[in-house]
Image (cartoon, rainbow, N blue to C red; front, side, top):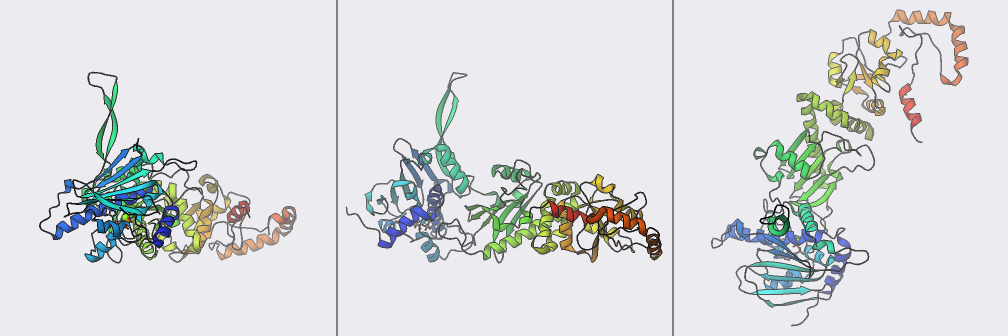
Length: 559
Ligand code: ADP
Ligand code: MG
């Protein structure tokens, strides 16, 4: 038996693979399981076109075995297998993908889920193994072969025996080093969790013997350990199921299983989009704010899958910042991935999906606002501030998405109202949408500046978040009505005669006002008589662009 050399490029490529393509070692298992799943898919596909073949679902599975004392991890499948030539071509030439060729030959298109395409995933096994052995028997052949490699040095192929069609990939797991732990890849719990994380939705069962304990026969306190074969993956992902088959509880379980939050989501959105880009998504609007939500530690994003295989845990590009509270996942067959399958090659598809998702979230929130006001108010208490920041950001570019999702406390209704509700109640002669900014509802209630507007019977919106007034400035108008702070000097409601009266007052008190201005010095720009006050002797008002509250906020900001 002669040792065959990898091609020169392949040697370099292998080195590159092992050392730099993947950021997490654990993904080797994802790659090997994906290959096993592809191999079963190929039999399934053949059975569709070849009448002599029958595909009994129960006969097809993937099995993971651990032999801890010998440091072996085996991934066994009942898939299509490889002939010695195929081993040579697919495992001996790096970046040659038998799966990609298979897809091309058979002109596979929609609904067919073969994952492989780059012909590099297999080699990720060398990140964790010193020796990789593949024993395989191809469908329709009675011969088996063993391929073995210690990495860049090359590989051997020799005849072997194997009773059934399929492939066994055997990894001799590396010994721990000072910096790297490899033992973990022989631990049952670790393997289980990696499979759950990356391969939960592989369509064939991934089985493994797991250790359990039970009461010893005849004893009521002594336990014994035993092993039992378990299927580790849930196979059919919730997002691939029909909405009609699913209950609210199914979605809530999925939310909990995925650790999206400890609360129960208020709404879920199940999307099955087909068209320019097809994708499936399950999105959640949480009820409670994550404890770190308004900190820089909070990471927005959705899980991104390509064909049921996890590519990214938090794909930030799928969500605009103002919807950063949304949790969930997206699965698409149309994504072109880069070689490590950790990144996307083009973001055009992603942008399309993101745009689509944004619109869905918006309409879901609108629906919530329309049909379940109490729930929406709860939601708004958690995440309203984020929506308002969104309105403020990018110079108001997102106003069409956000303006109708905002709520502000109303002086009249004594509860949170929308801008549209406010405008619909405006008396005909009212020109502006009035607002008053302050620290709390109670404080604003006592503001002298609100008197005149309230006295007119006009509704006032209370701005109690720092961001409110800044956000509204970005809007400028809502349904062609301008916003007006009650502290601005021109409220647009003083009648002409009142203005004249104040001119008279001004004359009368000129000396007093001059004295007051001297005393207050730089603290005020001018002291004037006003008709807007009733209960209060004096109030502050502003001229120009910044209101008093905005100035206060700007002063507290770090430069
Ligand atoms: P990819 O999956 O992107 O094609 P890989 O490096 O993961 O690339 O695998 C290379 C090729 O080796 C596959 O395309 C397939 O033809 C073959 N192969 C790998 N694992 C198996 C397996 N378990 N059963 C059958 N063929 C396999
Ligand atoms: Mg692969």
